[in-house]
Image (cartoon, rainbow, N blue to C red; front, side, top):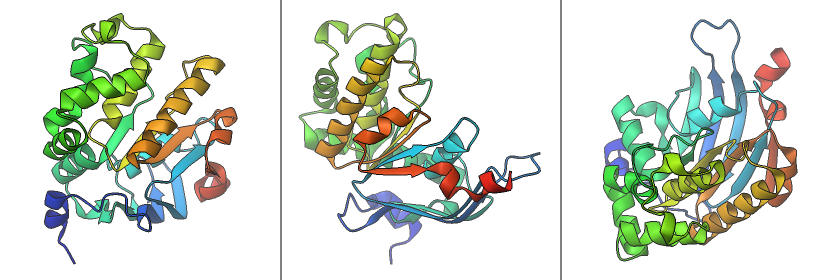
Length: 250
């Protein structure tokens, strides 16, 4: 069995059709100072390449769940395993490396770097992750070439690529965030309410683009939203209150 260091160096298994992408076992999470758990998940798993929609009302623990899958948060107890690596066994710096190499994240507020251009924002993961850089070169001639391809597929024209992201509409910023998350073919894409600021028509169009890119790259997708109308586009739907026993206790 490979050590944690070897797995981090070589990269976890990339989208093996039979391998689980995420396994949560007896996961509890409680925020400091809180008297009750936010999450109490006996078991959850998803396969590599699977696209899962997780729904739930505000305050049900959706963002906390994504934080654990991304390695931003650690369970209070239990185990979170992503791409064959138990995140509990990694230190903070190792989790940062793992997340940079293997996870693309679309944050609810996008978290784009305001003073960088569209193209520069998309290239950020490849500047921090040699593995993402290598995969982008393997997919295209260079990270810049893959970034341009992604932007075109996400309907952002070349005339916009040099523009600072703070000059873009919300819908355009959202697509830049998606391209940044997808560059370098991450093993898993984590999306936290990425359509919350869009109207219904634009939500559907964005989701079709996102699902298409994940299918093309073989990327696992865990997509969280309170908007049940988006669930019909996903092969698997999970209602978090059915999974999270902390909701019952609360």
